[in-house]
Length: 204
View 1: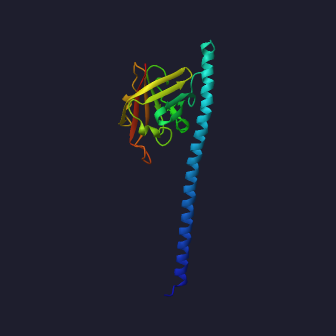
View 2: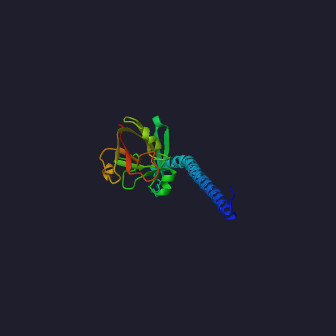
View 3: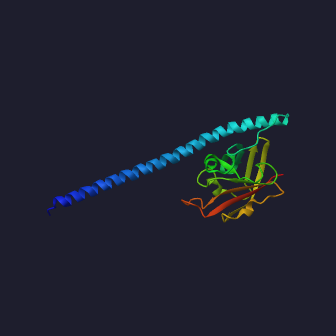
């Protein structure tokens, strides 16, 4: 079957378009993978640096107890470290829940008790990075909070899924408790419709 020059040109343009489209999709995918890898690598290095910062805060707290002043926390400051031994979790706790803060660690929710102190302390984290292991948490699991003032141990008493506007989970409490919050479902791509909540009470 003979093809006309016009048909040949149309076919050639089609092949060129497909080639350019494949190249563009490949480059876009490679860029996305590289961006995610760099973000995770940055967070990993920051977690290591946060350990050194916490050590310095512990030393500063000792000086404070000796009568020297201690600085107030501001957005992004390292407040401590959260550990869940059974899940192998160890994450720096930072002040605030800005996008930048949650890329680097778990964030203390403004208006709730500070980690390790009396009251209900709220801590948020991303479901696709630091708080992803929470999908496997169980009641009675131990959660440890290390701050400059010492180590506090909590025991998980309930886990539930709530609506995003359910702010009651962060209500003040007389007893020392811990509320961990992340988005849900864990494997959903895009904006998550619900929140996964872990509540724990301080062990005596």
